[in-house]
Length: 160
Image (cartoon, rainbow, N blue to C red; front, side, top):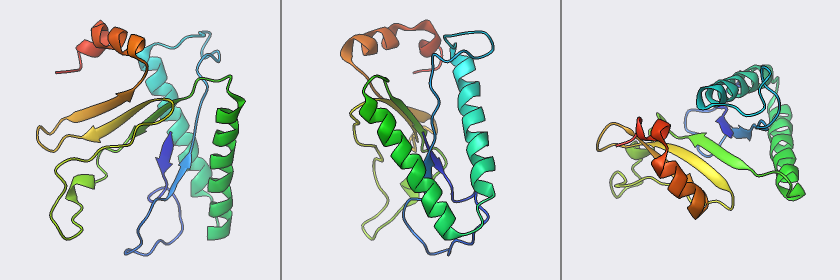
């Protein structure tokens, strides 16, 4: 999960800077958590919350830009190593909510749609829906799992 570092670090960032400032964080499901091997949905939400809190703590102590660049590079390199092993089944998750992506205007008006690109692994991207005020979930998975996902009663309670 990429974690936006802009408001989580104590380094001065020029107001007119642009580009991404993020680090990659991850956890492995299947690791025992509170005596359980498989997590329920709310348990995974707690794991993600803790992962983000740990990243905030880790990056808040960065003293200079070079150290930050090194830490961010290390986070990306470690993630690439995990992908290269091929034995893990990566599942990406990111929330682009409240980033104001639909407010960007590069001279030809605000975007009609903001989306992500497909990935080579399973993923969920949450994106603000400007039209309804809700949240869109862009999900990439294989066809068999998508059929099950569309029928899952827990998921259906939160979708329209």
